[in-house]
Each structure stands twice: as C-alpha cells, then as structure tokens.
Length: 288
Image (cartoon, rainbow, N blue to C red; front, side, top):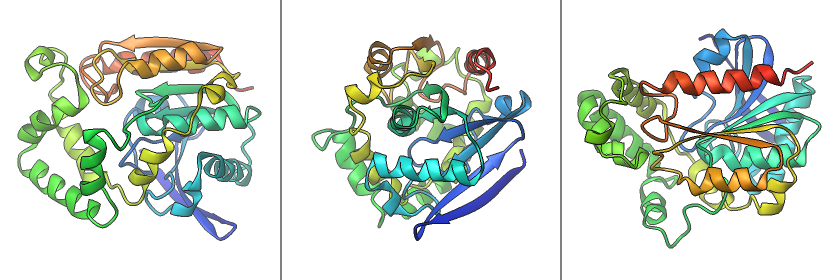
C-alpha cells in the first residue's frame, strides 16, 4: 500500500495524517496506541476503490496534543482538515477507542457524515479510574514511560512472536486460546508482531481514557446518518454492552456480531467476513 504522510497546521496546531488509495473518501479514526500508520482492514478497502484518510488523533504521532482538549475541539480540527482537502462528504470509520470521536463527529457535523461505521468501538463509559486496567495503563502507557514499554514489547515480540501472541490473547478475547484455536489463522501471529512494532501511546492514550467518556446518550441519538456496528461476539477489550448500547441509541443503525476470535476483527479465519460486511454497507450507501 502506497501511503502518503502529510501535516496540516492551522491555528498554530498540527494534524498529522495519511492518505492511501484513490477514490471514495473514508475518514478513519484509529484506535488506542495507534496513529496514521494504522493498517488493519485497509487492504480490502483500497482494493475496492476507496481512499482512506487517517489523521493521527491528538497526542498520537505528530498531532498536537492540545487538539485533544475535548472531543468538540478535536472534531472542529477534523472538519478543518476535510475543508483543507476539499472533501465535502465522507464515510466515517471509527475503531475501538476512536469510537467516541467518530460518534461525536457524525453527530456534530452531519453535513460531512454520509455514513458511520463503528468497528470494535467504545460507545459508552470505559476504563474509569476505579478499573484495574486504568490503573495499569496509567503507569505503563503514560507519556514518560510508554516509549520504553513499547520498545520492550516489540523486542520480546520479535524474538518470541508465538509466546507474545498467547500472552496478549486474553486481552483481546473472552475465549481461551484452546477454545479459539479453530478461529485463529497462523498469519495472525505475525500481524500482532507487526502491530506491536508500529504502536506508540504518546500523550494520546491518556487523552483517550478521559475522552472516551464524553460521548453521551444525547450525542448518539443525534446521529442521523446510516450506521453500521461491527463487533466480535468474543471481544475481550470492549465488552458487548458497547455495540448493544450504540444500536439501541443510534436511530438508523444496523448491528452485526461477528464470529471472529476477538477485538481485532480483521484477523482470524473469519476476518474476510468483516471486510465483506463493511464493503456491502459502503457500496449500498454510495457518495454521489
């Protein structure tokens, strides 16, 4: 995939973004610990003639952390980016911890949002200070330590890819490794290794754990574009209450629960079903 990396500076702040492919634009809000170099799910969309515009969200990559003061402020900058690129209408694809951003953008700027797709997305309260995962993340993924955390994970993963895959598996799936073995493709091990090599938290993840709780019921109910919710039945990172909640609150939504092995719905032997459902939805709501 040929990826173009650009930086857009406005009001003294910078948005780093990538563009891959030529065709109908999809604005991608990546998940946690990621950036504009994200890859999961891109290949099938590029092959079907879509163009993916992926800004590094605030605090990730080279995007200014100040843009992340609130979801409202961040979405104003994404709107400015679309205006700068002369794009009037997009499909919005929001992934995991990027879910609240996609939800907020679709609700706040309906004139730009042709459709909304939520993939393994956070849609309600998640990771509060009382949660064990929050406390751990606040230590290992805080800006002063995250670089060393990811360097260590990457080093061990490159040396022992199968070992790390098994160690990380419970964080992605509610299934045991034994229960999921028939759903796992052997290429998943290397996909996880590559993911760990490109991931960084910067200031972004600590911004995420605050902002994921900003998307309210009222914001979900304000979305008026066709919405597709894709979530694994076995997601161990974002519980099933999230897709059900979004489906209940978003007026024009369709929910599909996938039989993939976990949170990373593009991997595994059922990963092609994820691509198929997404492309069917996008082609049924073409941007004119």
